[in-house]
Image 1 (cartoon, each protein chain N blue to C red):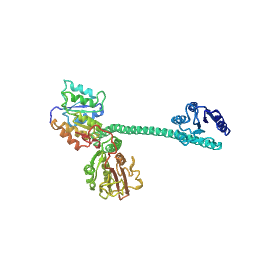
Image 2: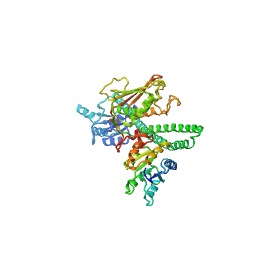
Image 3: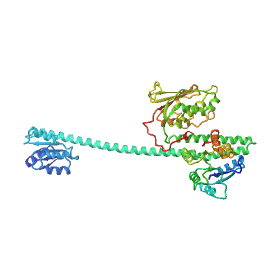
Image 4: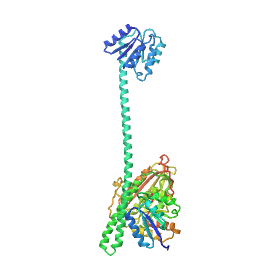
Length: 151
Length: 408
């Protein structure tokens, strides 16, 4: 199991942030969760030299100031950040959003599940895997879960 | 008003008097030039024209009159004492005259001719006016209809967008209701069966609403532009069957699929059609009898159920039959409508949108669907899909789809 992992969740929805934190601390207490309420805050936090970089970024689409699509572009254009896998984590399941973000370098597109057990499975699988087989884990999740996952 | 054109004042006077005696309104001109001036200012129903005049002669005047669109319909009657030879008469007709009378003339016959031509002119004029009015009315009506059509299209698009946005925005709070309900159940209600039962009702209702919203979203998405791609329909059916494998096994259903056509379709949408029809066939099965589902297809020349199979036909006819509970055929018009449920919610779950989506997708493919059934015996749905959509130009879609996400 990897040591001292950090996930970054970028979402302006306080309910979803609460649930995410709750479930993650349940299934993977070893993971530190950092949060940002919009894209701009996320980029500022990612570029702050005092913070260690997260291993995984969960990015909502619809946010004030800087939305998920702009934030994704900013991450993928930055040499220091572009290697960090970004998972779109949103309520949308619109093919246009999926195509655009997948083309712009998102590793996966997950529609927020409405059952907490699914969120639990997803976060547990992702937290307990190293980056080497992240894609495999996502593929497995997309086949085994009801949640809409594109990878 | 009748215009008499003659350079001899005696002729003018005698003809004018004759016509006035018979209550015709009469005007005169002593030369071709004067006549043309008058014709431009005043409307005449008949022109009686002398042939030989100094300056412009009668033929030239006639040619000028018939050359103007405004005056071309005024009948011209030539009257001549000098040029009575056949070639002059012919020239008179050629320059636009309706008759050529030689002097001396019989006043009674002249009057009869004047009356007839004037009457014809007035009738013709009335007819032209009626025609113009009619054309204008048709043009106005066409414009109104086009406008109304445009407004309808706009409001239809708006409505579809509204349905899409509304159902999309409804999903969001509902998802939270569900997630938090589950959370409460798991965290706090494990030891409290009564509270758990109540919470399960909240969850069941929310789930039903979610299905409803998802179906609505799907319905409103059908209207979006799609690409038609040559697709093996049998493969789509097999894909759907592998998705439904669990339900097929649970019900112990026997499903047989005959080879189907390859047709130009939006694969994601037609997949949805088979998905809905096959899951209906499984859902509405009899309690005590395992479902037998048969999917058959053949090419036909015309989209008709009686058409014999024809391998050169341009239509694909596909039937999906089951031995389930069926429905009363008197409801056949209703089943393709929105929110139409023929069965109680306790017996069979569902939103009543599935067949409406099917109908909308088939419409979008310029096809037809019909249904037959008798209660307790089973139901058959027959789909007709054109093999080619080439005569219909789909909206251009600049991005190429690697995956068809719309079917998910």
